[in-house]
Image (cartoon, rainbow, N blue to C red; front, side):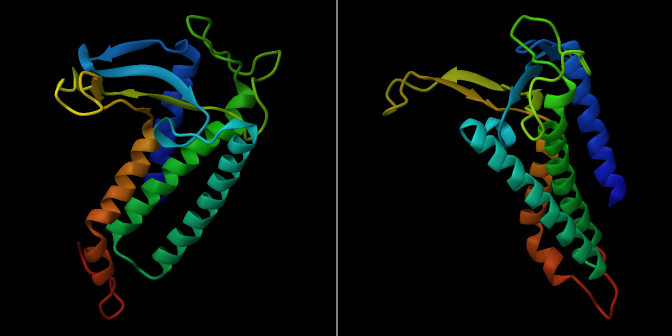
Length: 207
């Protein structure tokens, strides 16, 4: 489980650090020359996929909520390990925990160790002399993965949305977001299997 968590954190933080110190805000490039697969640097002050709570108090509440959620996930993962749940369930929970920690690191420390990134401006500096752009718990989360696979318009005859632009997949996200999504999806897909095959005579049943 620790290997899963540290692997996700390593990839997540290395990718974010590289983006922060090599790209200005809004800069992008294609992955393997593919128009629908891009590295596109943005930051958000909120939750996964750019969702947010408004204002400074909203940001603080969200950061405190994340800390509480991480603590609860740690407790739950330890409990599942002690009760010998299946390895698949433990890995999926580890992915959720790793993703939550990865984004929390941004909120906790990135405002302290980087200066502000602007559109078409200079890239961020690590540990600038003038100090960071925000205080503890007020850092922005770095996003960079962007996959606009479909870029078209709704049919004119469609009510309300007729003729309007439609893009899928619109959100820009990061490795931590992906880890959380994979973990939650895996648990939902295999919920019954995980919890009906918990134990047999003290031994974990194979998946």
